[in-house]
Every structure is written in C-alpha cells, then in structure tokens.
Length: 204
Image (cartoon, rainbow, N blue to C red):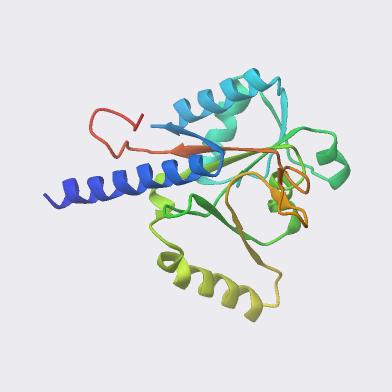
C-alpha cells in the first residue's frame, strides 16, 4: 500500500508540473525510459530541423546513457561551447536539477556560466528533468539550495541557482508582453519518468 501511495503522490506531482509548465507556454514530453527519452528528443529535433545540438548534460550515470542514445539516432551533441558558437545554433540542451509543480518552474544548480547558457542564448531551450526531482513547491528544496550554496561558498567556488518558468518574457513600459527578446522564444521539457508513475503508462 505504501508503494501505491508513493506512486500516486508522484503521479500527482508529475501531472501538476506538466499543467503548470504548459500554462506558461512550455511544451512537455514524458518518457518512460532512456531509449524512449532519446527517441523523443531526437524526433523533436528532426521536426525542428536540428541536426547538431549544443549540450551541457552531465557525463555520468543516466546522462551518459542518454548521450549515447541521442548520438545513435544521428544527432550530434556539441560540448566545447563558447558564446559565439551558441549564437550560431538555434537550440540548446541541458538538465534541470529540480522541478516545482506549483508553478512549472525548472531549477538549475550551476557551477559555471556554460551550464545554463544553452538555455539562455539559443532561441529553443530544451531541458531534461527526472520525475523523481519534481517537488510540490520551492520550500521543498530550500534545504538543498542552502546546502549547495554553502558548500561552494565555503570552498571558494562559484555557484548559481537559476529558476526558469516558460520562455523568456519581457514587458515594456506599457506592460505589453513580448516573448523571446532577451532569451529563448520556446521551452521544451523532456521528463524522464522511469519507472512510469501511473499504472498503464505515462500521463496524456
């Protein structure tokens, strides 16, 4: 019974995050395994005419497996990134540390500027998020944020916590909202729900 309750709780968080992210004009895709996730990202890239993708995905654990899966689909991942290079490409891929279900917000723990730039310079921001890293509210990750900052400040190392909700938006003095003036015009979130948290598959 405990496992059923936990799965239902996770399913509710996943659905809440998806609805909140879509409400701020993000596209959300849910996959139930690494192979399916790689296929989903690759299909999205083909649809958008993307053959080479600047990426700052971590290189360990499931991320290494995902990178292999993406390259096997014919997608070229670019790692030696500079600002000039990013400006030559219309999409960038990185991984979020957490998601906040209440607002559809992505949270990034960063230790260098290049970790976030694939999500701040190209017009299309693509993000991978694990369903197990989705929390109901920001208060649920307050301890992790404090520990991350304290660890790096104590060691004298740079760090930054960034929160992103939907594509970039800017309002002028007349409060006219424009999308993508100072950042990505579009945000696509690819959620790895492994194992699926809803019996019978992933949410519609």
